[in-house]
Image (cartoon, rainbow, N blue to C red; front, top):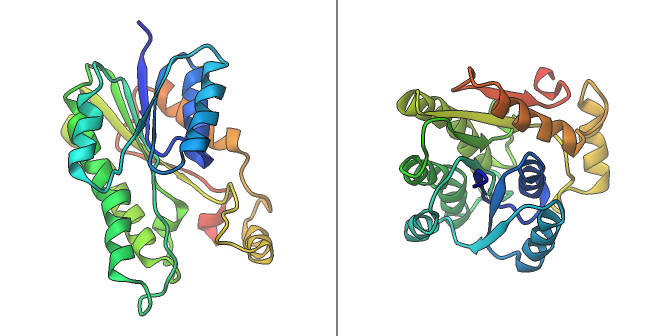
Length: 234
């Protein structure tokens, strides 16, 4: 029986990259998505094309009961990748309470609850990977709830690593600029990229290689691997 990996937010963007990477490494995939059904179906087909089994599961991870149902439906679990996230814009005077709560619920509480539930399904050698952000080390005034939630997720990574050792290793990956979002204009994206010491965004395979490294090196736990082209230096 092949090992099983659950990737949240796996329909598109980096979640899709992680799901495809794990599939190529020999894992069957539980592909979580929330609203992006069409993208989830496309990603499912791509994973199946490399010969792996895929189970697509829709769930709203801001609802604890849906997290419990999601994990309960699995007969086993080897890897959990917490990739689903919400990044609303709005400075500290303008950000709505609803967006603040949704960010914290999805970006921080959901990984905590998923780790709790997943720990009961994992055997010795289980791995939990939290996807944080280089923003966790910054003070992004346009994205206060997102920045706070990702900084807290890095702290939670260390706490979970200590709590679940030696049975389960818990680490995080903090990507820099990789995929331009619809919320960022072309001019703004270019301005941000010019600030990076390496003067380019990351390639998706460069982020994926961090995941592969953390899977293969079994003496690493409680760490955040930064893959940002030097952006944290500026």
